[in-house]
Amino acid sequence: MSPVTGAVVLTNAFGQAIAKGIGMGLPPDELAARLADRPDERNEAKAAIQSVLAAWEQAGLLTRETPDFPDPVAFSGQPHTMPLRFSGPGGVAHVYAPDPVLSEQLETIMGHMTAPPRAAKHPTRHLIAQPDTDGFAIFRNGAAVSGRIGLDAARFVLMREVAEATCGPQDVASVFHAGCVALNGQALLISGESGQGKSTLTFGLVAAGCAYLGDDHVPLCRDGRQIMSFPTSAGVKPGSWKLPEIRALQDRYGLTPRSPREGVRYIPLQDAGAIPLGQALPVKAIVIPHYRPDAPHDIMRISPEQALIQTLKAGCRTSESHQGDIAPLTELLNHVPAYELRFSRSDQSVPTCLSLLQNPLP
Image 1 (cartoon, rainbow, N blue to C red):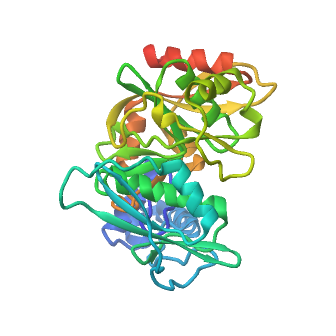
Image 2 (image 1 turned 180 degrees about the vertical axis):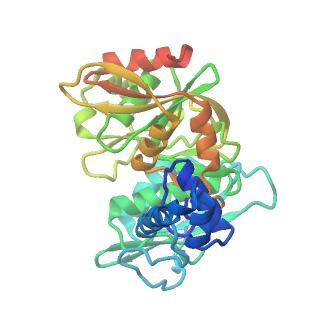
């Protein structure tokens, strides 16, 4: 993985040999001489090496200078406004969000996160959502972490940054775009792209008695074996309002006093026996959900390589302290079983996931 661009390349033994040669500073001619089985195969080996290097260059793996974000914005300085303050055992995040809509959304979702840090000298992350006429640019301690992006993307990036800050910037290796629940001290990670049923499945499992750890942002510990709780208020979109499990959660825990996103209701699932912010649990299994109204119910174990592709596509990103380092992520995926789950109804997906928490399939 490139620490500069974030490009990830999955390769074979030939690619690994090329990468090792590059690390040793070998030019293609010398590398070909080492990799060719016979002298008369050196030209063929060199052509193959150059083809691989060209593909890696195009993918951004060999880029040495950090490229600008799309639609870059210059930093105009820290706003003269009071920040939102979110804190957890690992540290504090001060979020400067002059836009009232964005500020209210963040307060609704994370305003309950006020736990004191473990250490007296704790890290504090200053996050600025700098508005302009066409959106926002996000800055971390004055450095850009996005170009110009819309409201929903700005909220997403800021929540991910707060997850790192409150759980411990040095302790968080990556942040999954995922939901997470636990049963008997074992976590189930539900990672998927938007619209695949990730959140609804998470909420259904909470309604079935699982402990809530989070939805949308789930930090991975640097040990590569545990995830951390980041229990935000849960946003429920209109298509899920009438589901029995959602109605049961709403009856049990109510709604947040404010609902500042049009068409989205927030349930304070942090009150649903949630695992405390920043607490780490081992992962029992990983599920990649694929919801379709007419999908046949099916579950299939996938390889660690497939799980890596799926979690990265879903939005998993390395943290600031582990930029370009996916070793903890691959550690998790090499040791925890991952499954693709296809379903059309909650009465298929929820029992299947409860079963995985008790006895993962081979």
